[in-house]
Image 1 (cartoon, rainbow over the protein chains, first blue to last red):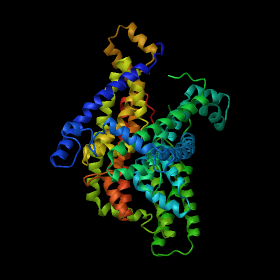
Image 2 (image 1 turned 60 degrees about the vertical axis):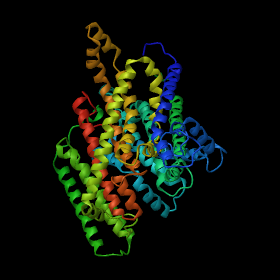
Image 3 (image 1 turned 90 degrees about the vertical axis):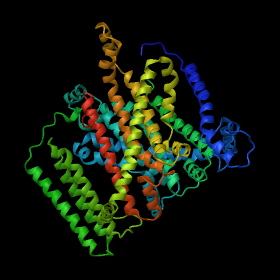
Image 4 (image 1 turned 135 degrees about the vertical axis):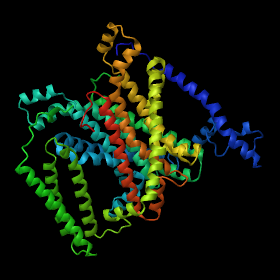
Amino acid sequence: MTLPRRSPLLPMLVVAAVAALLYLPLMVWANYGPAARTLASGAELECRTALACATQLRNPVLPSPGQLAGGFRALSVPLTSPLSAPYNAVVTGGETLLGLALGAVVGLALAVLLVASRSFERATLPWLVASQTVPIVAIAPMLAVLLGQYGVQGFLPKAIIAAFIAFFPVAVGMSRGLRSPDALQLDLMRTYSASGSQTFRLLRFPASVPYLFTALKVAATAALVGSIVAEISTISFSGLGKMLAENSRASDTIALWVIMVYGAVLGVTLVGLVGLAERLVTPWKVRA
Amino acid sequence: MTGGTVSVPARTPGRAASVGTLALAVAMAGLLGACLLLARQPQPTSPAAWLLGVLALLVLGGVGVRSAAQGESRAARTLPAVFTLLLGVLGAEALLRAYAVPAGLIPTPSLVLRALWNARTVLLQDTLYTFGLEGLLGFLLGTLAGLLLALVVVRFRFLELGLLPYAALFSSIPIVALAPVIVKAVGLEWPSKTLVVAVTVLFPVVVGAVRGLQSAQPLHLDLMHTYAAAPAQTFREVRVPSALPFVFGALKVGSTLALISAIVAEFFGTDGHGLGFRIQIEVGRFNLDIVWAAIVLSSVVGIAFFSAVGLLERRLVTGAPGRDA
């Protein structure tokens, strides 16, 4: 990029303002029908017209800003309560980080094997892809029971399920990174009569660092999905997934929105952490 | 991209290959024999001995698979994966029987196969519903919307600065957290799941396509400029080809995510169709053989979909990373 860099702050604010302005009519439009039906059913409501009720439904299709703010207040204080969303977000975040670390180690090992041995690649790659299409919702409870039999309980089963989703992006990204040195560079290593492990250490690993971090960012989001799903489908007492499952059963739409926002913040934070690690590891790289 | 593996001379097929075939045959026959022996013996006495035997046979089979993967023939590219699956399934069957694991915990592969056959009509309908209506349609919608959005974003620098950070932000939102909200808002029928899939696919595509469209080499763009090429020509000849690898990278991620997010979204409510619904119901009834049958089906469809996207990539992208995942 030779263009002078411009701050994205103003455009981002404008886009956010436009989105907020569009949200209000959308919200009223989406809630008008249910509000009218609720009124017609003769329910006791504090509002008179369907238009006024659109912002006060107990189960809105889209919650009004006031309702969202109320939901945030209800779910966020006190911070350390086991029922508050921030506390549960921290629990889920911890599981995710542990899972991400596990998944990264497994993914790294697989990537090295995939690049080092073509027969390994041919024998396993289709099944690595297949492992990603396995609906984790279904195997999560089974895995939890199975691990529970061997005394693995609490934090770890969820981290393992998160790792199960996270290893694949790392394996794919890393194998691409390990293959990124071109034929010329590989030939040079050969003229130096470098051994296979030397080629890995001196050429392939350094070349794969940018790929690793890109993959880790994808894997962080995936691991978060994994730990939330694990919380939904196993017996758990804390975490955003448990809150989602409970509030989905109770049809508390506003709480679902609040938890979704917390999940989003958590996802962004985790990706941000990976980005921070990338900056620390490759300080020389020019950021786009 | 074939890097270091290009100039390795193919081993002469001869003694090594026949030894490999022999190892593979012995391993398969041994595992099959073990399964049959165990079938006659409901409570095996010493599982540890069986475990050692099965592991030894699996190692032998691994040697066989390794030699089967030599060379560049079509068989060498496809058969190793098939053999790996067969060995894995037979090994699992033997071990589950040796340790007498109850079917309510992990069903043996033979039970799963039988469930797959017995429940085939229901499961096929569910697959069609989940993949066709929800996964594929959502994937296409998300891709289309993502590409259009990317074009608009690249055209207007203001939007690139203002919208793209949000797209990156949204792509790090866990979809499962989105699913219950969308299902509550749109309803229990398939459109809500299609929408979840579309949203899942959308943001990676936007980010990938924008990054790809901007990845065109300044040198190439300058060259097109000196040729006095019209902007549309430059776009077609330079920007689109350089964007395709990035777009396909996003599409591959999306293709594995599409099916799983459809299944996860069904977890939050359906009208009684779909693989996610089936899995959830049958887990509750401890019919784990049907659950695994549904998992097998969804994996088969998922692999087919991923391969189809990969095939399309190889057709469209010049210099595509051929064997790369």
